[in-house]
Length: 306
Picture 1 (spheres, rainbow, N blue to C red):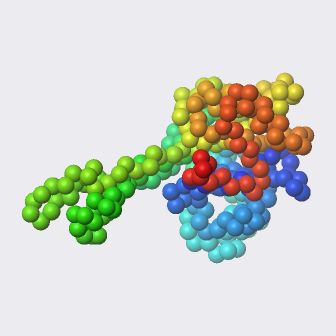
Picture 2: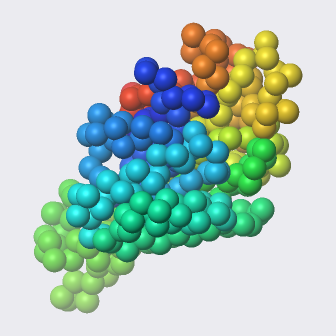
Picture 3: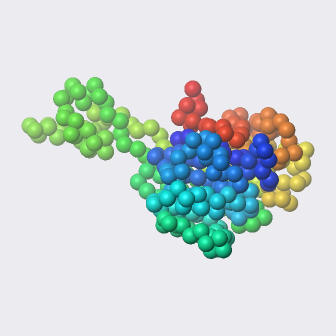
């Protein structure tokens, strides 16, 4: 699992910072999460292959989270995209995008599907045999969802020493990795646990932006491997958080502690602050494993403990 931060600042884009967008690489998927202005430029800068993006998740209909979407959709057309594109977002996102496509006579030449969200309860919006994606109801000034990405348990790992010792043909490897016992030609049954190791524990990633501190979400987030939580303000401006529908860095740390997550990633910083280490310092008053997002930063979750 790998996370590439394309943009992680609040409100307006600047020459050196970008609004929210990130790419999650998980189980051979490339999921685009939010699509602020400049997203496609940052996709190119970070060498993300456009054609591998098949699912885009939009948290809410504020410009710094989706104004880059119609441009990206149009670029896909210019690149002669053929594969399906699925967009998940609040009710109204289809109208917002198709109106622009209609007025500019820029209809896509590939299948474009909108999945509009209205539920205020968590719901699974995408699932296959390797991963699931469910909404995290957030509290902001408009209808907003975060997203919880969960790996499913993978195949068991072959114990190659045991497999080679038993002289098992490679044709049976897939069956063994699926958990089946091995039956030899003479009828001898070799239990699967003698031929395999347990798979790696499945990981999860939660995207929580934009939102006030919302402890109602703690049960859903309990034990999450990696959580990105907005931290728009420092404590010096804490009085601005609730009225604007945002959180402080310390509140993000409190959420991480209460949900017992493994790592907290901070982002969605107000551009009034020049020093991002201040966010980490305040979050660490509540929670130790704090990481700082920044534009262009890549988190390789498989190697965070190295």
